[in-house]
Amino acid sequence: MFRTTLIAALAAATTLPAQLTVDGSITCKENAVIEFSGSGTSTTQQLVSLSVTVISFDSANACSTWLMGSSGGLPAGAVSSAPFAETFSARADHTIRKSGTCTATRHYAVLVSASDGQNQASGRFGCCECSAGQFASGQLFGEGCPGSSGLTPHLALTGTPSLGRAVGVELTGCRTSTLGGIFVGLVAEAPGLPFTLGATTCNVLVAPDSTLAMTTTTAGVAMPFVTIPNDPGLAGLPLFSQGFAFDQGANPFGVVVSNAARFVAGARGPVQVTSIAPLSGVIGTIVTIRGHDFGDDPANLCVRSNDAFGQTVFLKALAIAHIGSEDVLTARVETMADDPQPGPIHVFRGAGSLQVVAPTSNLSAPGELWTWSGQDPAFNMAASTQLFTPIATDGPTVNVPFIVQGNRVTVDLPPDPCVTAFVYPQNTVLTSDAHWDSTCTGSGATRHFDYFLRSVFVVNAAGMLCPQVALEYGGGTVLPFQPGTMSQALDADPNTRGQFAVSRGAGLSCQIFVEHLDPSCTILGGGGNLRIDCP
Image (cartoon, rainbow, N blue to C red; front, side, top):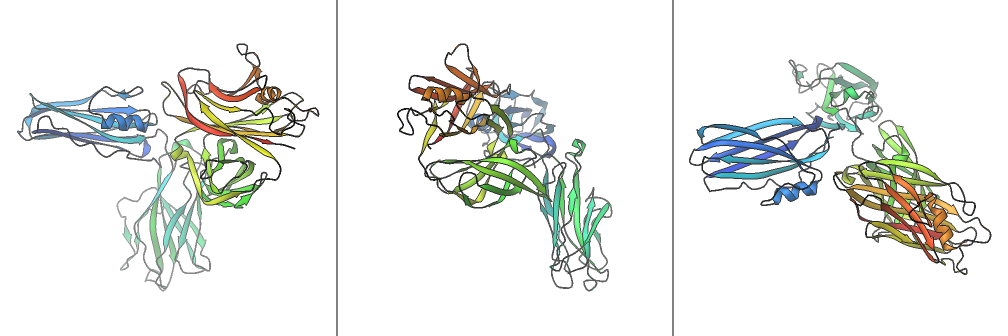
């Protein structure tokens, strides 16, 4: 569903002078539609011109900052339309109403200006977010009529009507073990609708273009599924449904109906998490996460738990199953801190990638380097209402934090974590996870990134020094301008200019960090852990 999130109240009309005022509004709607208006009022009835200009911004913050500003030009990345202007003979008030479509996900506001021939007034109004994609949505409307038991059938939607997926339609409050089902139609506002079943309160609200029939359960429930074809041409198409059930004692027609639903086919909506199980576990525990709109590729999901102290437990998404209208995600606990605390499990949906890391024979090979990136965490992230309790494994462990230093997310490997004469002994296990927000000049909104390397083991019987571990852990290629340094490309998105995980070591100084090669890109903040399990 297109999110129409108002991030600021309408700005108060600016009056210059008191007899001339302006007002305006903008609304972002489904199907990438923007509706906006501007009006001017003159107490002296001398209004002669009015104009409305639509301005788009690459972030909500930029839009709201401009909205509340008293003067000044547009911020970097903002785009202004040509003014929609009208002139006329003197009048008391005038309004311009227009609509358009957005071709990119941006934040929109309007600038309204008016003149009475001598004085000018202007005001800034908005903001709303318009998405170029069409997201699936559903809403209920209307009322049903009571059956012979006194209960009124009620229809509810489960899941979202995403293209290629099934949306569940739950019909409750029906007579038990009777024939029932749903009407599915293309219209709900047409001649003949609503249609009343004789002298009853039962109104057919939906054109019955097709019918899905089934027998209600002993609890008076029917749960049919409507499968949306995976056809991009259906994006934005509204469908309507209404439940029905035979009930001879209810009215002369022997049929009762429910309320109705309108749903719009489209791309996947926001991630939702409904349950997690089990609620606790050690590294290696398999966790089942149920919800909606996880997508189809587990590599595109980032799953982790953060407790109140900022400690992270990372879970690797393994598989996604679609059962009816529900998504079932299987994930494995991969990392945790020394003293982890309970916290909600967060599921992020974005763009993931998985690469093989091939260190030398001193470390176990191959490992897995996994990265994730995405925009708009409010839309792509969901948290469980249940808390997951991580259980730390026995044995000595060392957790070293990734921190932001300048334009890098950095972790310094300890030279002697296992207190074994500055050697990482055989069977030492290393696992990393790091998270950060990044932006590049002219690229648009901030993007969130995650970097994970699945556990690798020291297999050299003689152990390894800190510089060897750092260099081999990077698993990339030697950069010619930084001898003793290896790097692994994490992100090739042209909008983010390329990010690299870099490892370097000299003497007892050993580091792994993430950085941009483009100086116009900035890492805004982040963190994470390098976990070292000593044998």
